Length: 273
Ligand code: 13P
Ligand code: ZN
Image (cartoon, rainbow, N blue to C red; front, side, top):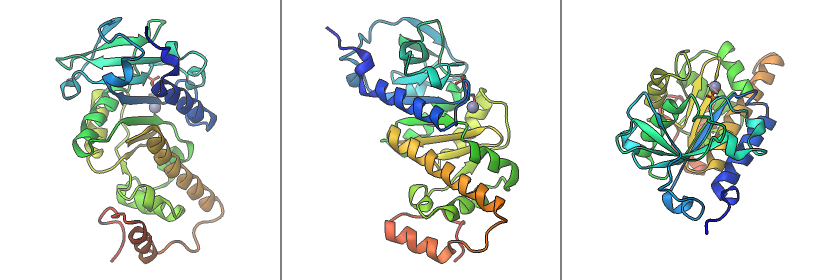
């Protein structure tokens, strides 16, 4: 007898995170998407993994993830509705052996499919797993102040990283690897997935100008917290600009002291010697 999947920790985490992202105003309408790498052992108490409900083709090769399971948000689904109807808005998928399709094991009950940003999510998972075997989660959201910043700030990874580090003392500790940024591109495509994943080699935060942000992490809390911290810094930046701009800030020497105190290595090339 299988247990009720709605009680599974990974389903509960998806419900709570989507609700929080909505509450914070970072996922209006169907904005945003999440994918969470889970193991067969985590799923088995709840589902018969031999029972495939549907097979959905993909436009790119995800074979490095063949046989891996993800719980993902659906395309066109509203984060505000996930906790009231998890089985309609979420899906558990397994990447097929040839990497060219996914098998739906649970969810998307009204015939839905995984997020349109699945290429970026899966390409990011492939990239992050190469550099961190503990990597599990990708979150995309439309974080308000980070989007706003992409209109007023220079779209340069080093300059953006420096500005965000200066805005809150915790930033350099939470993302010592900094942030990256890609040019504006059409979302939902394999091309934007490749461009984002290329940046994910060295960082866990990639800005999409005038659109939103992608974050990567080892747990849901870790990934959510990462985006939350960057967004808070962007909010402070917005307020600082509205108040007339910086009159003083955390100096490079102080940022280095901070990194030393917390045992993190700041991304090279951001702080002056
Ligand atoms: P989906 O509804 O397909 O997940 O798309 C939302 C989004 O944010 C696109 O970038
Ligand atoms: Zn988006």
